[in-house]
Image (cartoon, one colour):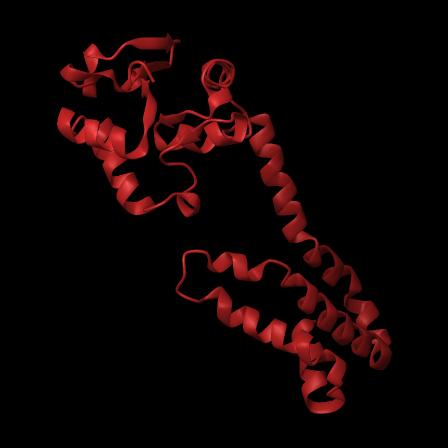
Length: 222
């Protein structure tokens, strides 16, 4: 419908009031393929110019070919609802299957609750695995070294370091330098990854633990 609407605008109407709307519609298509990690952000609100020209196209069709349009109406209407139905179906699946991050496990909730109560009032910096790093700033006042990839400084480099660290490939000296650089006060280690726990880390005091996570203090006396 929007293609019909903008086509009619180009060859017939050329209403100057729609110049900006047309530019928005056309540029949105190009920006969607712009080689930039945040390209999807360029499409925020793009449905506005699409909707305007779709109404123009729909209005012209119903005006000139009303009888033919009525014949296809009951096909066009359900097809136009597919996107909304897919979104609702996906949300229902996430709800019924208790998918993360819509749902937190009991241990995730417990560790976040402990952080918020004990260390986050002073906005401590915490080193966590990437998946937990997305949750900590959302549920607490603590800061993380790596959280959302587009909101993390030097995200790619930090993620590489994080993967090496939780694979047990970072030396004590490299860890100490990283801790001082980011002023990290606490470290979260998943119990499921204890096989990669470095020997030198056993000297760090444990301040909290549950069935899934261990939290260690990295800078004693901080």
